[in-house]
Length: 261
Image 1 (cartoon, one colour):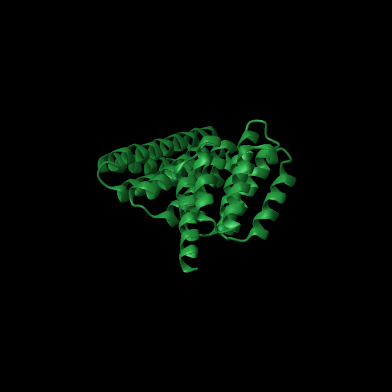
Image 2 (cartoon, rainbow, N blue to C red):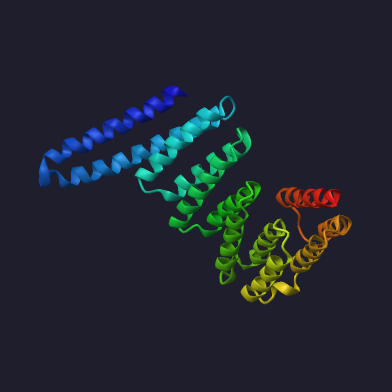
């Protein structure tokens, strides 16, 4: 596979050299230079693809080598202005840091970069997916204000998008869950009111009821009630590993407070 990468790099160097050679001839060979640039762009694309293909093999033997290949692919795609493909491979790196190593902070950084690139390429859905991962990891790192801000921004951007507005209640629920860990009923109550202002339909959803019931049990530091609400929530709304882990963390915190008393 090293031969494949070396082959792609050699082609890229030849393409760059050819462009410089044509440029010396001036306007008489303007068309030649134009086609040369097009050829160079194509070869850079081939190089990027070669790095990406190499990564598929390296994933089986070395995560760090796979990440290195993807980084090279990202750089190549950035050079030719293909932000969508650069974003795809940044997302792949984020996943490798998430699962393969793991390194939450580096994974977060690559998901954030992927989101920015997807946004530049006007691929909103993929950008939102990456930012949701950033929010989840921020909460995992106990950076709750950052996670809340991201979830609220995602909800706000989704409200007037007919293809994404169905995601709003989920974003608001996740933002509310991050508020729970602060164990401040005033803050949680304000958050619920703020969510209703953002989306007047939110108060009629299962997500709102689930969040309000959890908030009430947290306010009373009632572990038993929290457990019941948590269990009932599985039948009301779609659960995912992140919500489950996060709520178990809140429950553990409540249990520790109960034991102190």
